[in-house]
Amino acid sequence: TPPPFGHARKTHFSFDPSYVNLNHGSYGSLPSPVLDAIKPIAALAEANPDKFHRTEYIPMLLELRRRLANLMSEKEGDVSVDQVVCVPNASHGINTVLRNFIWEEGVACLIFRVTFIVTMKSKTSFCSEGFEGSS
Image (cartoon, one colour):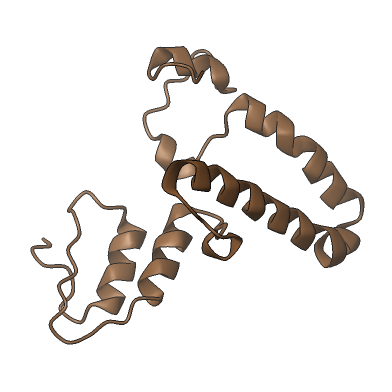
């Protein structure tokens, strides 16, 4: 079972005990178990970067996508590997989604004022009206 939200989750991160993280979204701190799991992969990549990126990375990525599709299928119904995409960060993901919409005249594109600036800039580059109500 997952740990409860709030202070109980702090033990799952490698933060300095005197540090209070108020902006987790900006830098995406990894939970300690995730950090431990990626260390062998990072070591593999660093041991022979050319081999890793040319022959080992893509099969590993495909296996990850398969596993994620299976996990999502359990919750959402049939999800194919082709519907699962891994992106380096949320801004990249939002930009990719926005670039793949067919934008037509008269389509409204709404965004909250508290939206991360990169996402807001992506939106304004796709919607000719820009950000309504920006100040």
